[in-house]
Image 1: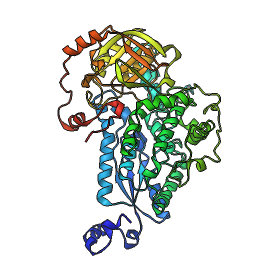
Image 2: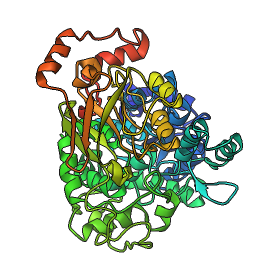
Image 3: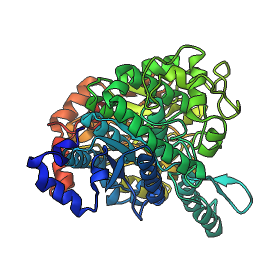
Length: 554
């Protein structure tokens, strides 16, 4: 066993004495030591139940003959961090989580790992760590939140809550209406109830083969989630016994499967940051170009919030991620020969799966659209690409041309939007919010929600080198690369310049001549860094561009 490095032989008696200090018995030390990486804390609603999930995982490990040992991983609630300096610290935690998990696992020589994450950056951060460490590993997340219910019975969720603020600012909703959303949008523990980033990534743990069926969709408050956790704890012992490692599972074919399922589900645009970063750790190269190739042949089968009015609990009742994958196999869009943490191939896992509700998961013969949920656009304003969740864009905004309204920070933009300065036809440009320029590449849910809440989502587009929450809808185009702080063309846009967006043809163009752009480039001076000390300053020096996954370069 790998853990023999810390527990066997006369040379390891000092190490063993410290394991005795933990109260571990010789019987426990004779078994595989399984690290349980728990993201439990008391500030993230999606993580408040992870203590119970962790205990259930530990029970499963013990039942199958292992010794579970828990250690923590940090987590940020993107919703609480939204709209202020805290959001600069969201994406950057992904790498902190991966690095700290690598340190703990290598220092203590665990034989296997169960990752217990839930919200936005914990899932990709721990997948990165799993790929990097390459010892038997399985995921068991905390599960999605239940949908909320307003006083009149309508179902709701966090994205509606953000849009309610915009409606209030526009004078179309009163304080009582906002309070109704505030009290009812988030009714339980769990990751917020739409197909936002957390649920997108949890669903993709199944698609990539690193979690048992149901991990992405079983609601957090249900006892089925506890049973799943126990089964996960038992299954890690089988993976250790058979030495099935992430490198056996997270192959190039598995990442292609994940990207295909991503398109069918209509996942968050943040997956276009996380999948390349995880693949990089696994030694697999994927890039933005592959996304359009996958989208072109993958029908969009689901319209969960914010794209529609259904929620994660509905997807679970319809058969979950596996039912979506089963539909995709009808046109041979998945490589089902890949290995998974069940110890079986995906083909075996899908044998008895059925789509239980064709209103929630459209049959592949009758999709919402013939192409996937995400599109990568290119043009002179984004030579290395930018990303839009096209499944959440109204038909009226699939093509749009209008004058640029330019802002050098999220705060400047939101102030102008709330002041009523943005008009139908405008293209809001928010720059210097990229991985380096932010630093930290903040989510722009407040500006996009303000635009929607004020009734402008079918007439105003937004372009940024920052990123968007999975809760964002509308013609919101993010991840512009190269970013402004790196001298990208977005830094050269001036107020009133015309920007042409053609999502169907994957194009975004600044209608300014090359000669004029060269003049502007010669006069451009990069602004002083917004943050000059601490972790964010170090991050800004090491981080790559968004099209590369915002990975840290060595």
